[in-house]
Amino acid sequence: MNIDGKQTAAELRETLAISVAKLKEEKQIVPGLTVVLVGEDPASQVYVRNKVKQTREVGMISNEIRLPAQTTQAHLLEQLEQLNNDKNVHGILVQLPLPKHIDESTIIAAISPEKDVDGFHAMNSGRLLNGEDGALVPCTPQGCVILAKKHLGDDLSGKHAVIIGRSNIVGKPVALLLLQENCTVTIAHSRTKNLPEICQQADILVAAVGRPKFVKADWVKPGATVIDVGINRIEIDGKAKLVGDVDYDAVSKVCGAITPVPGGVGPMTIACLLKNTVEAANRLS
Ligand code: GUN
Image (cartoon, rainbow, N blue to C red; front, side):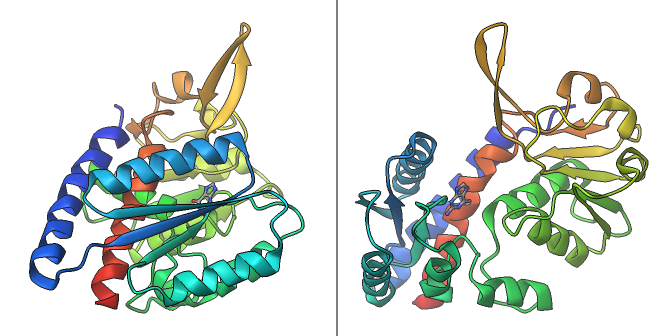
């Protein structure tokens, strides 16, 4: 059975549109998200266009700052300072990756934690780690948990979650979120020994490795819930195709439920970005 991320994201956006209307009516605030794009990376341009479009669709203000690839780090830091001080901006997102001469961690650290809708600032990852209120939580991990609950219900308590991948953007935060849900959490990665055996123990298997069709059917416990975070562009018979980190055709015959690629985790990421922006606007107002 597929877990429909497109539908779930649309439902979340409907709920957010209601919250946005309420903020307008009760506090005369329109949540504003500013996306900063440095350079001309084609994939980033597509992501940014989608973010802008969906932000407007739920009734929020969307601004886009496009800077040339040769922009200096100092200039980008100045732009962020202005956005940090702008009362009409509630969320700031700097699209990654950045050009090589700009240090990503310096840039992330310069975003006001209260406006860091990506949830990448150390203040937000620290709050998530400590289980404190008020963290802005990274978007893709939030999407993963929402989709797991869509199939399993709200109580994930006691389930064994195995995550393949330990990135700051997905692997680590999704592990913390599932731990907060009282799952038993295993984080596996490129150096893990006996990866198939470990995956076989998973009630919830999250694949975030960035390798096409990496997870095979005999790694998956029958009935498990599989969350595929991968977005890999490959060529099959001369045609470009988008595939996940999971060998979908084989795994879908074994598992209880799986998020397809495309149409699974992907659409949830932007919906959760909008959710974070509404939350930030609520807290800043
Ligand atoms: N590039 C790819 N994914 C992301 C994301 O979630 N946030 C940002 N800022 N850049 C990205």
